[in-house]
Amino acid sequence: MSAKAFIDEAAAARQKIAVASITLAELVYLAEKNRLPFEAYEGLKQALVDPEHVFTEAVLTASIVESMRRVLRAEVPDMPDRIVAATALYFDVPVISRDRKIRGSKLTTIWHAVPSHLNHRIVK
Image (cartoon, rainbow, N blue to C red; front, side, top):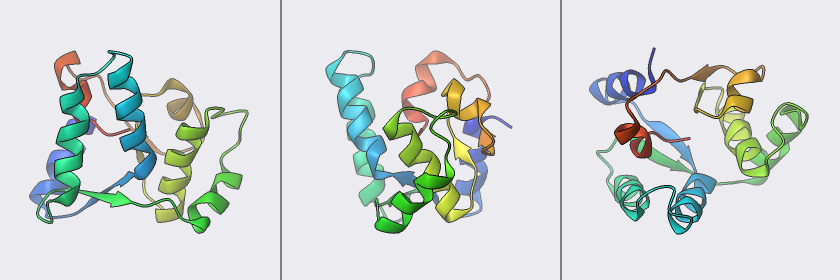
């Protein structure tokens, strides 16, 4: 299943998809490096304050940090990616990510190629 289809199904079922707080920071960073438009950050920020939106923020907590110990650094070496992975483990949900190392780890992931113009809408 593609990430877009997964998100669309969750929205249609009025379910929520947790977005790790670190994802917002990553979007700012990538926009500053001109790898994503700033609108990607602004769009996600607006989505997270809309109680009707499918996305909800998963704030980094000590419990999620503890879950990082279950994400092998050898499999997912980048700290932001480990936080995203740990967030998914903590909530016992799959990770929506196109990151090769996350997809290559033992975590359950959702990703399927989407058109490049949609990439900024998909949450890591």
